Length: 422
Length: 159
Image (cartoon, rainbow over all chains, first blue to last red; front, side, top):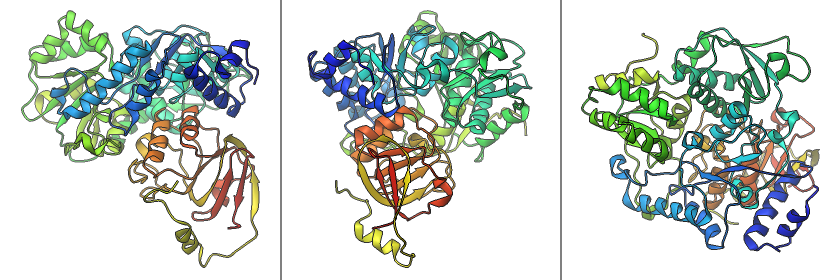
């Protein structure tokens, strides 16, 4: 791999130990994936440091202690506890105190304490052709597919790229990877954000990987719908990018999206596919303790919609309604009066975490000294196929997938309202 | 490293009793993460999302992978079609290492996500991918494998 003089200097330790360590990791990664050289990055979405995983916060503290600083605009991914309203979630205090230490590490390193899976709603909005890194699959697919930025599905090394401002050129940083591999013919009109989530989950399952080109949406999907589609594609498949011609830069037409002609065969995205995803997460007897909306973390527009539905209503006794969003969006929604409306209705507006990421997770590995005891939950109603999969597999309780509006109705009535009537 | 829950050499040998002993053979593959390690094969037929699919503290596969559900990954050479799902894969692999429940090595048919490679690099788990033969159908559970990530080889048998 060709290294530029400054890369060589970093690797030789001439810019200090943190950058030597960072460049060493990036060179190892680049060689593994056959990168020809390194590129400058303009943005990094990096690891939070997660209190539910043993010694994981320490990974970030160790970097901050050794003097590491981010060289490009950087945001922190979702964390394991709400750092402020944690009492509303039942999180044990030692877990929260540990999670708060991660915020200290980020402040020292100069990264924004966003603690969200949707940093774009919080103002981190990379643009066309910007190389970037991301530790969150939802961020990778949104930035590749909606904004036209260039990102792989990275792990911890995203922080090394943030420190060096560099990343090896491979995968979705190359033009050749950013062309369609499969044609998806859309033969249905998804009715809601959750329908886009359901559709993405089934298409991701069918494809497994590659770059899906969606042809035939009746109208341009909204940003929230594109966000839901991508999050689900990235969950059920190893998918980093999709193309909606006319939306995804720089592809104006289906023909543009393929480098060797439009494939003759197409995968059909129809009403049955949407229905299949809801049925996949409809097990159990419809019993639930919690309703959760806001996966990925809700946008301001979604907060406005939720407030409209819940204005003057009341969450049923014995049921909790969690609305998860980033702290930045929460602040905007507070100023707009939406958070007051939601809280008056009995909803809990939670930031920095979500059900699958908080102390509910049973497959995580918190230090026993933190006293984490996941509550016994009989079921969680969700509006996101991504959250549904991880609730089932990590929280290990039934996930009931329905539309956002029906999830809210379930919280108000105390009875599960499915997407499709039985 | 020695870790709780990880199969020992003796348990490998017991597992092999009764199986026909044949000469070792070598499969070429693309080396992704360096290092050399051996263990019994655990063959997953479905793409693996480490986050969601594995319980860190036990190494048990808990996700929707019908071919290997309920089995434990610790000390095994995991053979799988490719990665999917969360970019949190690195964290699960690395945490499995912290808890001694990690696979000895990984053999992916398709080039896995950078997140998987980064977790393996942090944990010192050798990884090869794109093998020359159809490992999913030709390697069976429990067969002894040695993966050399730097050389890009898989050695079957010969222990």
